[in-house]
View 1 (cartoon, one colour):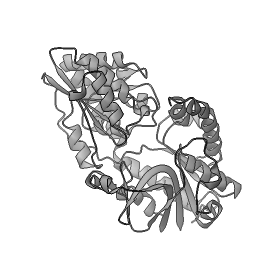
View 2: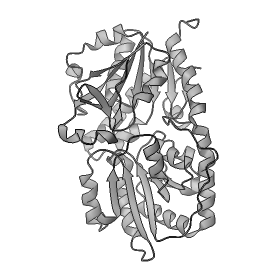
View 3: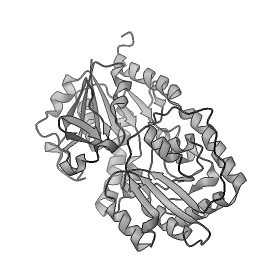
View 4: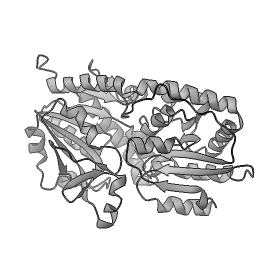
Length: 390
């Protein structure tokens, strides 16, 4: 049985192997390959430059047997004419030829595939990993903001029509994008084995404070807000605060911003492959922050919590489902972010309490629990609504 999986994710081809700069390593596809003999992935697929190939050890190898990648001719321009989106790929045939369809939303490619499936009266499932309204309304461009209600309405329609939906949040996305199927589940994107017997480190006062942040280098992640907070923090003569960012994308604009705020020597931006390298990196941090302007349920935040890190995040998406309200701030409130960081490092008891709460909360996102949920979800996708006995 063949599965068509559609999303806007950027994959990169190099010497006949496909890579992802974030997520989507080989192990990701296993959740589907348990149930399907073949996966056809339709997404953005680019040729990796020789220059960029030097960073391959930091990327995730996505190529794996039984997974084939198709290039959708989509360049991210919001108002681009959709007639040629799939180039030489016949969208109708692609949808028709695959037995089952999963669209990961929000995404323009996912929308196109879902709409075609609806036209063909063909079942499809949705993985809803974020809120398109928040994503577009927080763009700096006027065109992006104007497109927010269009994407919101499209997503509501597609989710309503889906045979079943996997939501990454417990409540937030479910309340905004409704689907009546009894087969829906909530399961985070995270693939994490929580080390239940972890000895959570107690904070001991020291002068060099490492703040961690994981996320694609875009305006969505509030990196500008983190840099402004860092500027305030380093006015304190007692401590040196360092902002450590893991993410791919255009880092120069953030380095320029750090230079403007006179904290360039206090900012490091780099990339690491998923898994143990990120966990080891988190263990060198003192505090984790997620100052995002939009989110589904941030994987990096859950990974940080699993290492007993106190965390501060904005009141967007599923973040309030993860951390105590005492550590939630309004998006854009960099002064509030700086103040909460200072409170945590100046109060050992508060730091330890936050650390313990986060660690215990992360148990809910252990992969053993999530794998069983996903297994049942994708099993039902394979069966189909009208073929319960398969």
